[in-house]
Image 1 (cartoon, rainbow, N blue to C red):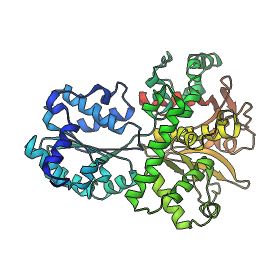
Image 2 (cartoon, rainbow, N blue to C red; image 1 turned 135 degrees about the horizontal axis):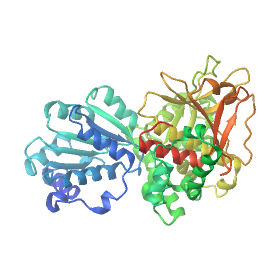
Image 3 (spheres, rainbow, N blue to C red; image 1 turned 30 degrees about the vertical axis):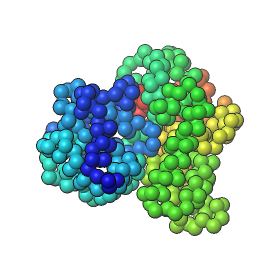
Image 4 (cartoon, rainbow, N blue to C red; image 1 turned 90 degrees about the horizontal axis):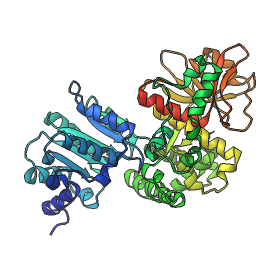
Length: 480
């Protein structure tokens, strides 16, 4: 019998879709906690004014497939007939060898004949000509709705701008924010106003600021573990942090570097890709020179380095932060700062037991977390999140959120016991032209207002409070 016969495909589909027989999803697959991206995806799926295919993108183990199962569970609870819902993991070895139309024909011939279907395609980038098929299904079957996931976002974005223009929406699923992590593990929520946001500190009395920080005090003790393993839902719930980091290396990093990317981009030797990623883990939060990186890796050409950095970004393993212009100040020649997509990934790869007690390393880890949170917070908005380095002395502002129609948001990370901000620092010089300027500190008592030399008020706030309140604002639908 042929490996990819209709009979063998049907067996796989039956295994993936147990609700055809039971009418319900397996609780172990749907979990109880719902990510912010779940609500975003359901809103888009339910939108009757503008029909869109929903595409969820993010690295391995961030919960994309769980979101699909949660959506299926919600549809079943609404009374959608179970056989109208098809889930297909295109990462399955047999389905990788099957033609896309054979899989769909098998479903319609044996399970459900009509086209008013909810398709859930997992890891769709493994299907040959996936973008053409999504376009065809969208155009030919107006009653069909589709939710797809993929771990290679540029491939998905490219398809979106070509075949998918006006047809699908890409939703980024980042690793857990600190706020989501605290909700997932069951930390008691601080009792404060839902409208509270970080910039509220500018208008509070000292007593009000202190009361807010006291309400956040229980959150602080969870911060270091979040930085170590907290970005991935299943691992965050693990009782064994050492095992969680091992799983992160094997499932999140090794599979991407040794299997996913070589398969997607026809990389014959993954060793160079691994070397480049290890280098980037060591320099996360620093400005990276491609020429210097190629020289450091001895034998790796500049074009190869550039390509592999794009591939790592495509797999959602890194962010590239580019310099932005500030108030007409001269900007450093365009070189990116590169951040590992989650501080926990960096820690798992480097395996440095002393990392949490090393001030320099902790500074890198926290800046990585701050950038990741801001990039995730603003990904759907008309903004870019970069950094500033310029002027006569090449002074730097760690993170700049560049708004199109208003002043920028400035964030400087000073994660150290004493966190002075010199009067001639870039953030002091440019804060008067910003919508807000924030100094992220370490100590829980290092909060309040910092006055720049020109009298402009800047916010000082500990890292754990900054990240938690950013998630609170996201859930409440507010800006920073």
